[in-house]
Image (cartoon, rainbow, N blue to C red; front, top):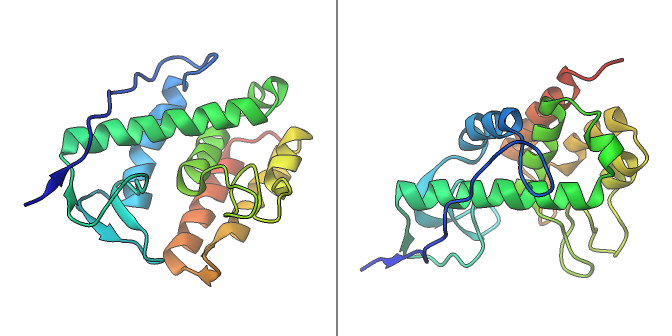
Length: 183
């Protein structure tokens, strides 16, 4: 018998604002995340043994869980929204507003995958395990979007293991991030 996932209300993605993701950014993510993450309905162990379901969702997942496509859609939208809220909180508006949708989407894809991080727990977009802010975040906060984009390939490891699939994803994210930046 499979244990269904708890209901997660569908998140609406609307024009970029206080807590919403722009339609162009959302459209990019809704086409790239399924490719980068893959959709798997029964829970499985990812390459570093974390129970995972849908498009890379790990929170609250246990082996034996099985999701529906509608549940995966809701979780993916929730993850995109949470990534946007984190990005919006930590990256100044004048930097965010000057970025092309492709760059914003690349950073949201990265955040969707890594999360914020936490001191003494794990590296992420905001915090490193050592308690410092990530170089990527410091560069973005300083307005150097191009240099922040070029940090993406440095994040091709999980739990100290370099992963080929993650390296390819980070290269795709960096290319997307740099694609529409003005020189």
